[in-house]
Amino acid sequence: MAFERFKKFNIDNLIAKNPAEPRDTSRLMVLNRAAKTIENKIFRDLPQYLKAGDTVVINNSKVFPAKIFAKKTTGGKIEILLAKQLEDKFSWAVLLREYKPGTKLFFEDGLEGEIFGSTAQGEAVIKFNAQNILPYARKYGQMPLPPYIEKARARAGLPKAIESDREKYQTVYAQAEGSIAAPTAGFHFTRDLLNKIKAKGVNIVYITLHVGWGTFKPLRGEPRQHQMLAELAEVSQETAQIINETKTRGGRIVAVGTTSTRTLESFANAQGRVEAGLKWTDLFIYGDYKFKSIDALITNFHFPDSTPLCLACAFAGEDFIYNAYSQAVAQKYRFYSFGDSMLVL
Image: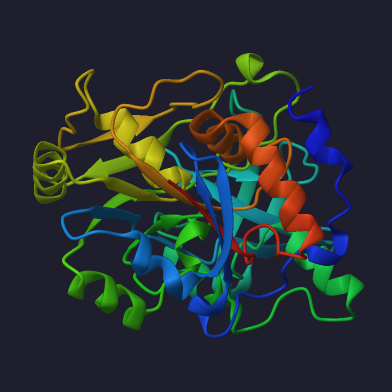
């Protein structure tokens, strides 16, 4: 199994229940791949590791309240995670704990649905009586927090979901609605920190990758056996131009998160030049993958059986990442989506 040794860490008490406040006071572990050194900093120290002429690439996808609730004919309550709207616009691929085709579902405000089988990826399919249910989700839905956050809150005697999650489970620069999971490496940025980075002569550009459940779909074996689910990604002409000019001038490309990294690598040619465009990408980065576009990575501390951990290990080396995780546990870093961060140079 992949990354078996990472599973030995006991981090139940280290799972962050909420983001740091202010966000840029989260801890930052700085890994230097060439020198094999590890430093312990605060995220607001990030500008000291950036140089004028570098470009920071951020995923501006916005999470929508994708967790909705319905009642069955029997009166039983059912929790639904909206995953992807299908071609007929009335139907959605959704995640359910268990389901039976033909089950009718009843929502607030007259919204109804019926379960119609499943997709090739194992999602249930619900056909609604309305073509656009996003307004309904925005009104009645909950933010799709990862289950481990809800469990960590429950262990601490806290509510699993709170109204402020709509703001907390979102980056400060989120703009393009479409994700069902947050690009969490960006949680640590504040508007003030972004302004300080710009004032240093560092470019900040945005890409969009709408995070689906494929990003957090766990590995069930070795990475080579895993199939990444496609997610919609976009790189604007302006972003591509700034990235390519940065590389031509010798500046560094600093990717904020694994979603930004996968997007850039999906749009980069063999020479590392990034092309603008919109496409579905199922790029899975692991093992000895040769990176074409990025020079540094900002990422959180991830689950052992996760594709983001595979990417981090591919970029920095599994042994080095394992050493960093060992130190993070010993020093009580906060883990996972709302947790602390690492910068890999």
